Image (cartoon, rainbow, N blue to C red; front, side, top):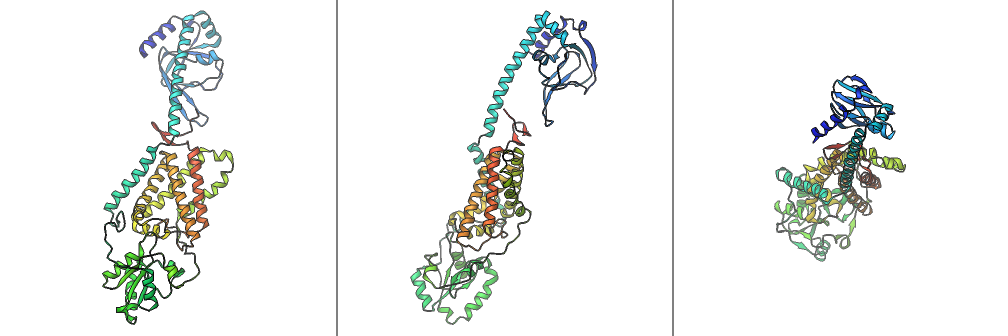
Length: 479
């Protein structure tokens, strides 16, 4: 088809004796023949050689349109419409051209209907092809900007698969559901029975929670034996029990359970493995605050453990929030790219610190007291991988709208957990990086709110350097 069209063009050109009207010129390889945007003056016919037709945007982005060889012509569109050149033409190799002036070109059209019909036919073909290409591009751009359920399945599914596979080969692996399939061998007693033993001095009360919780409030006279420091503190606890009068006849009441029911049961099992008898837990594990006399100190803010560079970078979205008040900046795709890279780096950094130590992160989840016991380990396994996968997708520009949605959902969950911890005066760190974290306070809420705003901006205006068909789109395509 292309050869037939070329032969047809050759017949048209040969019959016109353009050499009698135009001027023959020779251009070298790389030489610019026509420049986009200039006023049209000449029509060109290629006698020998090859040229490339291309467009160039204001940003310097070049789009190659086509290549022309011997027998083809160019420059007629601008002469016919009277508009500036719509594209540039550059010689790919040494080429010999016939250059026809505008007056001569008008004369040719007036006296050569064959050439006029050929140009009209060529222009109509370009219009049809252009309309089809425009329709295809519009459909593609609409689909590109839509969020599909497949995007979420891809990222969440990938996170779950990675979490399960790595946990199998991780030396620090944890069961998917804590205590699932294990029959509890620790007896329980009611609050009434426990209070009677306590009042009769027939019990040794042990608080299994972390020291910060114990110091804030505990049963009067209770001994603190944190589960996470059991191996370190058990010798001292054993010595204390041995010095207690009538210890052999007393019941050891372990309390400190939470909604996630982790500390009291685990500590009671460990005490029984050490040979201690009469170890029980409270059936109503959260009712001790109303049943026993309490003592403690005013809530203290836990010490801040620095998060490093990611911790400082968390403040950038808060600073950017002020810029978002300016409409042109709020709509900027360049700001969306910066937000993507920033959020992606933060979440990837936090994820890497938690992936290999899921048990530590699980205890941090327990501290918030919002996750049921069957979901703690699954959450501790999957969430860090979700942070990693979604963070990488944001950085690489892959399915960024869905990734921004998931990051926003994570931030909403974090904000709810932080606000709940603040209102309940929980003496905990955020647990962002394993044992390391910032105190739970309103500043931490502000940071997450800033990241949430950035997610909204990315969702609405991210159109720059995203993975498109055939590669990365380096600019926003306006249709």
